[in-house]
Length: 66
Image 1 (cartoon, rainbow, N blue to C red):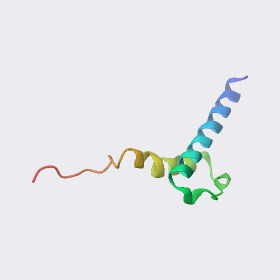
Image 2: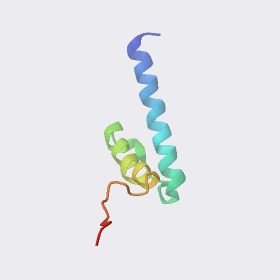
Image 3: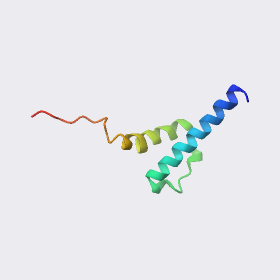
Image 4: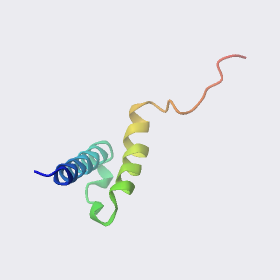
């Protein structure tokens, strides 16, 4: 297997994992057609819908001192 083939397989697996996690966390996407979207767009959706949710919104700041 060539290096480019290996990278292609990994990219496909990553995309499938991201789609699976999106659908698991948000069942409304069960019938969503992800094939129309690029790998980059799926990664952005994953970041917004899954990663930010898993982190508990750590990207937001809260006032701790009064």
